[in-house]
Length: 104
Image (tube, rainbow, N blue to C red; front, side, top):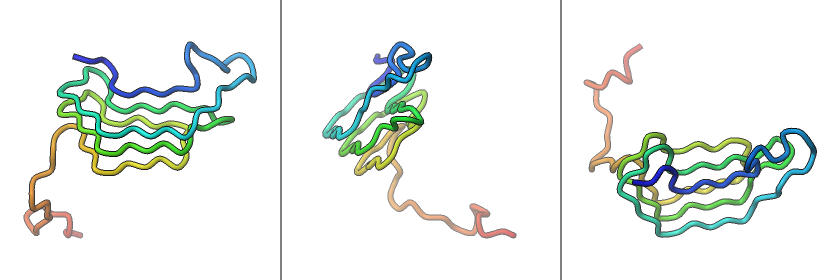
């Protein structure tokens, strides 16, 4: 079992917390990853206000079970396509009157 599946941080070991030296992280492409179980978090991106993580794409990423699915902070331009975290939505995924979402 994995603790973290994909973790990208520009604050590794507290970098930049007590100074102004921030790592620039960008242009990452993650494709065709599969995992059955992640103990803590599946996809984590942690930038800083001064240097957000940007231009990251997740494509065809499947995680069957995860404590936390996604955690993106201080990020810009993040793409997620054909990804499932925590299982799959069955077909058809529809809402009906019995779901109560149309009630006032």
